[in-house]
Image (tube, rainbow, N blue to C red; front, side, top):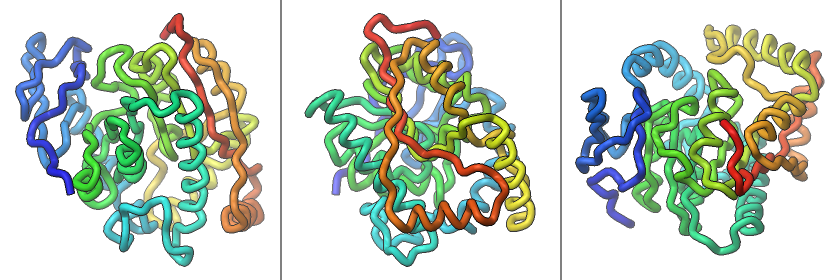
Length: 315
């Protein structure tokens, strides 16, 4: 099992406050412009803008509690290093089956686009790091990004996996990525992009950090044909959260809309393709039961591939 490095990796780091460069001192990143320091603690680099950690402190414990109750704690799995493969009797098996299909599609897409090249990949909204772990196992340099450092369902839990196949863990937000322009080959977001507080800002950041020819890959995100169906789903989702957890949603609209997403990405100079994946019977049964118990149209969960043009594109 590899040893987790004691120093922060030599990335082209960017200050989340002033957007200037950060000086890497090994166990801390320094912004000389604003005299700010960003430490590495418990194997994670904390790169939230000043004040954001305090504002998130009211949200993250609620989100963490819900995810634990719903069976997403990494320690609940006997072999977390095998995710997305799980016991078919696990409570979240239908969703993990979906992620397994998506993971296989992501691997195939990266091979088609880049062959056997070793890529620098940003796992956007990495949660407990299962995909980061699998990407690192393929030989890629991986940066796992998530605002939640929790030790059970967040980046803190990912330390178990990072100790097997190392990847850098960064506590930050999608809307303020602490990386310099054009510094990663691919950005992959699995089951998380729809939770961005500002999806437009998050898309700006994704396009900014991607190299020309780099790919933004979006998976396991609910995408509706129109905004009204998504809004109806959101209201029903909020009612379920209130009934089962006594809490409301953490974003107003946890979904995307096909036409709006395509137009937003293309306006930023990305060539967009959607691949509709074949799901297994367990996922279809789970999805159909959800449809029968609600009055909303079901969402689509395609694999979205958006490749940044060689000329770049505006953001």
